[in-house]
Length: 329
Figure 1 (cartoon, rainbow, N blue to C red):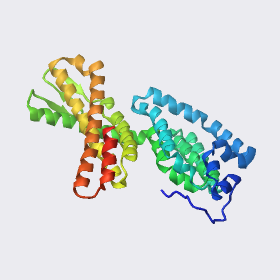
Figure 2 (cartoon, rainbow, N blue to C red):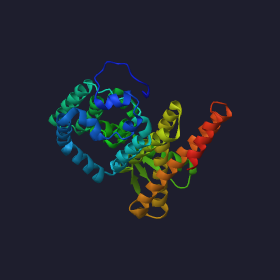
Figure 3 (cartoon, rainbow, N blue to C red):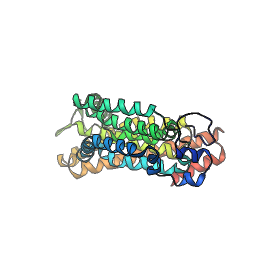
């Protein structure tokens, strides 16, 4: 992500706000607001933003409704807040980015609106919701330029975690997760040899009852939340792009193993305590505990990467101390 902090010689379209930045007027840059960005475009810019807000009002309303009603995506309420925090954290760097409004941004906006209408015609919510993010990116390029969009790339991409997966992809992921969780639980219990257990598909056959690993127990809820956590944490606490990707990808097996452990614990409680232990409060509490365990394992993995890199001399001392401080916070 390149931040333009020097005077530009490009002949691209400029506005009064751009001229202040190009002349090095830092005080004007610090007082930059959304209104000051839109002001050079006059009433056309304000009208454009108002029309787009009206277009996406129903999309946003249904999206928030799904966050509220679908437990798999309840973390959606936190994603925009964290995205705003990431932007706020980089506010000083973002202020120094030279604004070069580009007409290409309007093309992105028009393509995104086309995607919106295509999604509505096909009753595909995912397309309509993704087009909202595309429209935001297009507006940034149109009013401020591509340099600012590149500087805000990760906070904007992070918003994708708030958009539910398409039903086709969701169903393709859920069933394998159910199968892996049931198989992990059965194999572990067979190794412990505490009581006889058999598995038929996603059903665990215990001595006195059968336990089905239903869709809600597939782990998709914790997987999506933990992936969002891994991406946000990696961006804040780690400088190395390679390690960020390692932590993000490592969260997938950690989440799967944690959910398999949850199914195993549920089977143990159901066998020794009774069927009621497999549902209600105990079932929900075990889900929260596994989420906490996966997070602790994730933090432990990051701490391990810091120690290994420092021992191998791949991590400068001051960077290692900074990373340790962030992990301990």
